[in-house]
Length: 259
Image 1 (cartoon, rainbow, N blue to C red):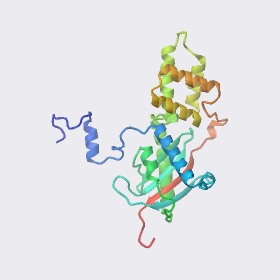
Image 2 (image 1 turned 45 degrees about the vertical axis):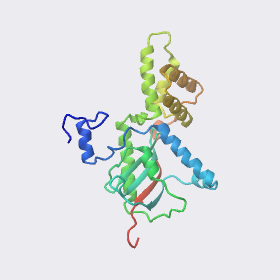
Image 3 (image 1 turned 45 degrees about the horizontal axis):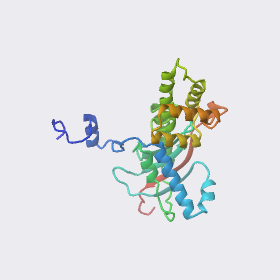
Image 4 (image 1 turned 60 degrees about the vertical axis):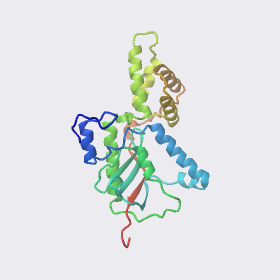
């Protein structure tokens, strides 16, 4: 019974979390935020497995236009209701996924869970587009933009390489301030990370090192090296003109009788 003195969970769990579980609050079972390296690795492995199995998919997929969409049959559950999956690139260059139900609400913050929900076989038939598809895509885009503002702003998700690298190096640089180890290149690199998205190669490299437990000094050396080689960030000429870009979307709906 919730509220007794006896602990029923090995890990601490607060009263609000118990209430959220009781009311099946959206996202409460997601656990810790996905690490970007896991999402990147899984997405790459899906891509590699697909083109290894059928090399003709490579040019087909690479030539798909932006904002492409499709719909597949989906057997809804309480945790995975009908809705639309949206994949977009934000104005700050961050890749993001959203899963939006028929009511226009986000179902989960777990990027890996959303990615896995998109799984289907090559023979899976497409269904006709739901009348609410584009409206729900719009809701998904707005959710992603709002989420980016509230969880790290232009630095992206707190679990991402850009956010984690920036926060660690900012503290590290502050600790070095006034010492012989203070570095202008490090300060310039930190500023660049704040103002511009990381290159994909830098993201992958930083994710690997962050996951391996790199210390602050080593992280600073790595970032400075990437900065000096101009391999750290994608610097856009006209920052004010950047807009969110919808890459693709997938409707997940139960087939209707006669549909």
